[in-house]
Amino acid sequence: MNKPELHTHHNVYVLGAGFSADAGLPTIATFMQTLRKAGEHYKHSGDDGSARRNAKAIAQVLDYRLRAAGAAYRCTIDPDNIEDLFSLIDTEEGSGKSNYNNDYIRQAIAATIDFAHRTYARDPRNVKLMSQNAPGIKEPYPGTPAEEHNNVRLLPRYDAYLAAMTGMLYEPVAGRRDTIITFNYDTLVEEALTNLRKSYSYGFEPEEYGDGAGGGFVVVDSGCPNYLTKEPPDDDVIRVLKLHGSVNWGLRRAQSSTTHGTSVDELLVCRTFNELEDKGIDRLFIEPPTWRKGYGTPGRGIATVWNTALRALRTASRITIIGYSLPLTDVHFRYLIAAGLRENISLQELLFVNPTLSESAEGYKEITSRIFQILRPELRDRGIIQFIGNELEPELIVGNGLPVSMNKECLFAKLNPNAGNRAAPLQW
Image (cartoon, rainbow, N blue to C red; front, top):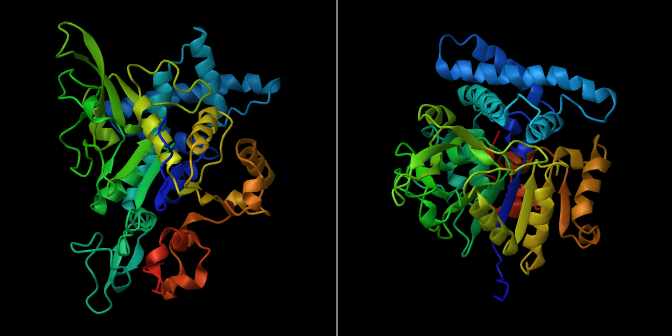
C-alpha cells in the first residue's frame, strides 16, 4: 500500500450551484422559475431545430410538474424543487411506468442553463483589475485594454474569480496545485480559464482519448480551444473535474476502429452547448440531480473523473466548498469526501462558503446539520472546519485598494498567501 503524500499548497475547490449564481444561473430554489422563462424564450425563437427541441423538452418537464402535484398531497415532495421533481420522474422511468424519458430532463437542464448563460454573457458585470497590484498577470493581459494613466483593466467577474482562486495575480508559490471539483453543468469555469490563457484538463485518462473513429471514449472536437489539454496534467494545469457531466459533453454511437462492426459510445467534448447540438449527438452527457444519479451511465462513464477527484481530495491541503448545500440526493458526495479524507495527511483547512452559513440566516441549522452528518463537529472546534457566511463576490474582490493583509480572514487572503502587504488588485 502506498504511503499518503504530504502537500502544503494543494487547493481543492468543490463548487455547487451557488458558485454560478453571480452569473444569473439558477440554483435549486430558482431553477423552475428560470426554466419557465427559458421555455417561453425557445417557444418564440422561430423555426429553429435546436429551439424546438429545447421548447419541447421544457414543456414535457412542466407537464410532469403539473401531474406531480398529486404526490405532494400525501408526501413531503415539493414539485417546484428540481431534485424532488426529477427524482420522481427518474423513479417512474426506472419502473418502466413513465412516458417521460430522462433525455427530456437532460435537454431541459441544458437549455435552461444555456438561456441563463447567454443572458450573463451579454452583461458579465466587469470588475477592475489594478495591473500594478497584480504582478502575476503578464502580457498579453486578459480583459479590456488598460486605461492610459491608471493602468486599470476590466475583467468579467468570473475571470476575476478564477484568477483569485488559482493564484494567478501574484508570483507563483512553489509546488502550488489547484483542482476544481464541480457538480455544475455550466462552462463558466472553462470560459474564464480560457480567457486567462490557463490550461485545464477534464481529468480523463490519456488512453481514453480517441481519434473520433470509435477508437476511444473521449473525443475533443477540433473547435475546442487548445487550453483543454489531453495529456496528463502537470502541476500548472488546472484540473476541472465535472462529476455530473457538462452541457458541452454529448454521447454518440460510433463504429469501433478496433473491433469490426461493433458500435461503441463516444463522449464528444465541444466548446459550447450549441456547438455540441450541431454534431448530431444521441444524448447529452449530464447526470440529472436525482437519487438514481449514475444509474445506467453507458460505457466507462465518468469513473476516471471521480477517481481523479478522489486522488485530489487525498492530497488537499485546503478544501474550499463554495455554494454547495450538500443536498440529500447527493449521497455520492458523502462517500467521496469520506474516502478522500481517509488517507489525507495534508489537510489544514476545510472552508465552507455559503451565505446560509451566517448564523442569522434562514436555513443555517439545516445546512450545518447536513455538514456534521458527514464531518465531525470537533473539526470546527480545532479550526479546521471554517464557515464563511458571506456572498462570494466580497470575499474574492476585497479591499478596494487597501492592503490584503488588513483582512487576513477573507477568502482572497487565504487563497493568495503571497499577497503580503500589497494593495488588493481587484476592485468593484
